[in-house]
Image (tube, rainbow, N blue to C red):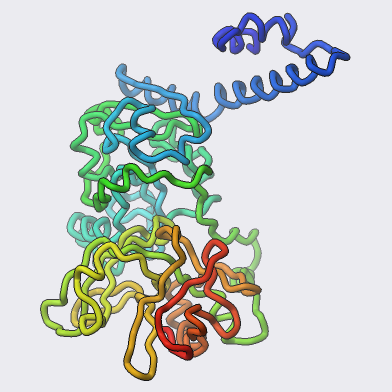
Amino acid sequence: MLSSQLSHEPHGWLLQALAGSSGAPKSTTNGADAKRLAALEKRVKRLEDRRSGGARTALRAARAATDCVATRWVPDDYYGRSMRDRSKLLNCDVRQMCKSMLLENKQWRGTDEFDPANARFYLVVVQYAATFDAGRLRSALVERTKLPAKAFNFRVADEADNDKLSGFKHNAVTPFGFAESRVPVVLSDAAAKMGFIWMGGGHEAFKLGVPVDAFLACFKPWVLDCSTARDEREWDTSAKAVKPAKAKAPAKPKAKPAKAAAASFEDYGDADDTAASRLALVVGKIVDVWPHPDSDKLFCEKIDCGEAFGGVREVASGLQKHYTVEQMKDRVVLVAANLKAKKLGGFPSHGMVLCASAPDGSLSFVDPPKGAKPGDAVALPGLANPPASEAQVDKKKLFGKAQPHFVVRSGTCYYKDKPFDINGAPCTASVADGASIS
């Protein structure tokens, strides 16, 4: 097996000679040879990793579905490149590149978790050139299933469920070869119009391309409006030169009595500190905004809070007296993301945009640090807990306990004496000292 793998590599004959006919590296006392052999062993290990497991499973399933399958191994820095550069590696349009996301409906109350009309999990395929929009998906499913909107609340499935249901690791998920074939598939209507799409292939560095017609015939997905197109200027923005990290969900407790679930967070002995540690204060980008038709105070906004927090959501904010639509559009803000949805002026608002207000009436957005991206979360030094569910935040009044301690000092936002920290930098607000945050 090793010999055949090496034969396909550049200078494969030399690698084979160095490895020896048996496939095991020859012993040597020469330092230079030892270094070369160590590099060879590393390369061989990488080859064995690539050519076994997930990638093979996905490719076999894709070829069983269609004769027209394109494949490409991409370099290690692929996810650190801009979308446009990635598309050049695949020789495709940016809008043809897709990602597969396993979502869990946290409001699922059905009897058959694989019933497409009311499933617990959905495998959603959307373009990289668009942001997943949980609000649009919810609306599309309400129209299709006739269930009430409150029956749907989507979050990215936790790592354990992802690995179990898909059979693939994070960043390698693909519908082809998906372990639990009963999970219903949703394809964004924008991707369905592309004719040919690329997606993950069972390994972080392996990509599969297939005709949309073949994808539709194989999975019979629901084609739904579930994404919002990104500004094309974002196509040329490079990510940090690291592989994308999954927003970690709290580890599932082992099989124990039901009470064990309540012990999955740390009690800091101060009810307000514990409450603050369980709030999800995350970076969001306002992708659309308009004045509420029946209120002279409210703006209605669509805010991208990152895929780990449901993608794009709708939020209402009483900011008409302080900002214009132009000042709001495309602004990066801080959002309290695990508040229970409620209607403001009849508009379903799912979260709160945080602002700082001083006694003199002046008001300012809480500004995340430069470089912060949708989904990045505030960390309070010394207070680390998984976010509470929306129901827990509401029932235990967690926001109401923590918020009175949100304050601005010298332009920096604090909970008590702990700065709102995102990726090592503080959130700020341009207001006088002592301004409260809400």
